[in-house]
Structures are given as C-alpha cells and as structure tokens.
Image (cartoon, rainbow, N blue to C red; front, top):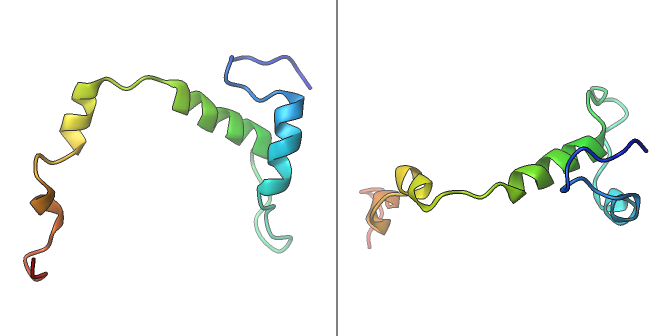
Length: 74
C-alpha cells in the first residue's frame, strides 16, 4: 500500500476490518471505476471536515411544519 495522503486515510489494519463489511459489485454489473478503499478514504475525509453552524441554517427549515405536507393531518 502506498503512503497515506491524509490523516483520515485508513490504515491496513483498519481496512482489513472494514473490507469484509462492504458488499462487492455484482459480476454481471459494471466494473468498478475506483477501488473501494479509496472511496472509503474519501468518505472519512469528508466526515472530518468541520461544518460551520450557519451552514445548517441554509438547508434546515426554521420549523418542523415545513416537512409536513398539507394533506397529512397533524
């Protein structure tokens, strides 16, 4: 294995634990473009990025009622 680029990259020991839990692609399906380990590394990298609290206010509505359709009785 090549050297890790980021602190969030999986070690060989961590990958050995995680790899059996990830389903493989179906033999009749499309071949994988990227190795599963690199995909896992990318996910863990994104999870380490801190999100500023004001970023949530742009995607989260102020009230819970925005999620309830008009046709559903409360």
